[in-house]
Image (cartoon, rainbow, N blue to C red):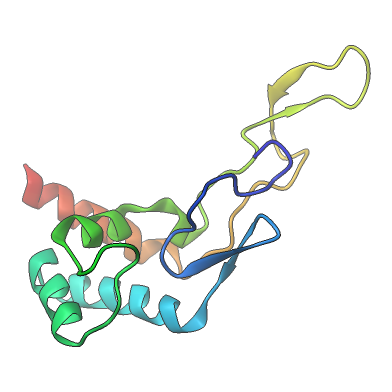
Length: 130
């Protein structure tokens, strides 16, 4: 992660790991965009999961889509490129000091779509959870 690499064993649905970098997978990204579109049109997370299961669309890891899987996708910052890889970096001169990265090194993850949809989805989801 310190070198701007995605350091996890499993990429988020819609991405794949290629040389430790997240790369968008078009056919899976289309599913993620569809999940957001349906949610923003008023469908609930259970309805979306049921529809994906009925259409036999393979889920990320489990055998079927669950409400929690849809909620995770709707609130995952990686889909709008808000994930910062290198929140801290090490200075290049002695003494080497770890410090907050204020843009000295590239930080952003590639986004699947703009942030307005996710912000609206998060706001909508919070109102249901209250």
